Length: 196
Image 1 (tube, rainbow, N blue to C red):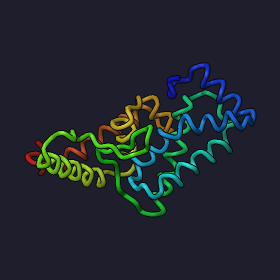
Image 2 (cartoon, rainbow, N blue to C red):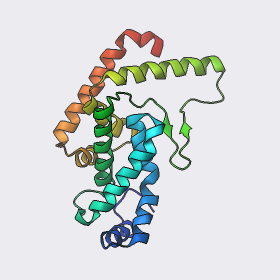
Image 3 (tube, one colour):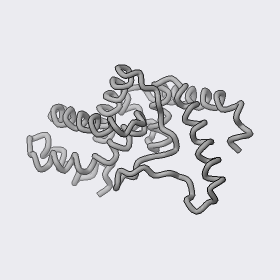
Image 4 (spheres, rainbow, N blue to C red):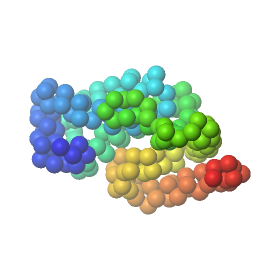
């Protein structure tokens, strides 16, 4: 089953969950747990709080699923809950760290790197340094721009999905994404030689 399309099988599980079917609710959690964990880790970048925020996301999902009306894709609706919890966490804890080019493996939950493990150690060190430089720059981009950047560039979400997830107009999504890219490019300009 394509986990992120509103196909009939997923729609049926959602309908059963809305009716209070605990097995269906459990299925929804199982289906979406990897992507919710991955999203939260991408935003917060602190493995010690991912599980708590993911559990809170699913608790809120289950408490409010009766109100889900299929107006937006379920993934967007669920991601909105997760993103809002991440925002609350960052505001409370003043956590301003952001995703690097590392992500969690959807199946194992382990951190995976886009570095080629067969390359020589010197190149790996250089690549790590470049990624840390990009991460520090992303850390300076305003929160709303960072989140839209993550959803678009790291999660490959469409403008429409991001609009539904964040509750913004598509024009706002595009302008925030443009701003995030521009700010990131400006921050990285002094380091262009090192990033090549």
